[in-house]
Length: 457
Ligand SMILES: [Zn+2]
Image (cartoon, rainbow, N blue to C red):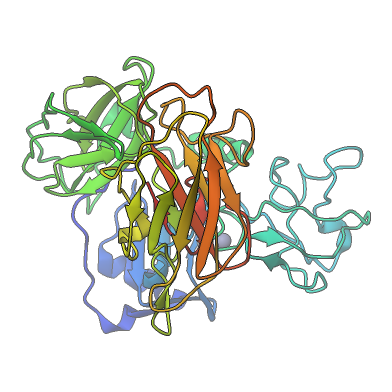
């Protein structure tokens, strides 16, 4: 399933809808000249539904249901609101539906075994765990994104909700749909009278949806650039596009999946999620077209390393920055000295132009300095991609692991040592040093999302 933007954005210049109340919905739809056969998404400064302030709302499908959703501006680009309302639009209930119903038998049980009621209660889907979100007797529900509630269901069973589910209410904890939810959405799309098969019929002839004006197809350049950050493709711009979808196939071009999008007039895209040394096919098409595909190019990727993510990169508090300022080694044949590098953009620094030399079987010492205007405690780990496959494998130090150091020692300066296995073949290998701030927690992931810290290759 892929969505196309229908015509240009329609700005409704009217103060009456700036802070939107659902009581104004029909007037708004009229003012917009709202079309049918499309999903009408309205953005407003604030949104209230039935007098309650909300991040957005939408309608479950049905023959007379408005094909309309309202979204609060400030939540238009978070991890959940638009997908959540799309979920409702395609027939999904909240995972916590009726979780606090006064009639306890209306609540969804935790069990999926004998006595389970997941097909008739809650969100009616069994692969979404029962979610007690609305209960007031569970104590604190979340620690970070971990569920820690203490309440139980009618059978005395402890809840284990899927905190990252799109149809729950936990923000910043992921945006997952389950297979069961995808199935419901597909079924709703096919059976509730709202089916819009753009693929076979072309763009809908709805009001407010301008006719296709694109006459040209973008052309992908055969020249691609592959480096450790990803594979970059380029194409020629065409007139009239409002952006491009980038699609990738890993089965020789039989099936393509969208892997990203760019804005109008952008003609380059770096695929940072491509695997190393893998054959792919790529194509692009304008977002406001279902037919203007580019040619397809086939590419075999080089070594691509995942880009680590921090939710608060280069965090600064009272003048101090939480990052790695310096990394250096001693006792190697040729040492590394990367001093006072500060915090790199997005807390990821590619310093692979700096190399060191070390003999197989040797143990070397290293030093990390965390003082950038002050010291934040940070844990760290170090990997070396000994098999040169583009992945840092291992979550702890040990035989066969590519993690060569791991420490929860914190301080302004932290010293350690790492050993290079005697059996290591001569070659050039990438090393990754990753720190993690906040709670004193071991670094086990070379790229996963941390809140604070920095990574240097
Ligand atoms: Zn909702």
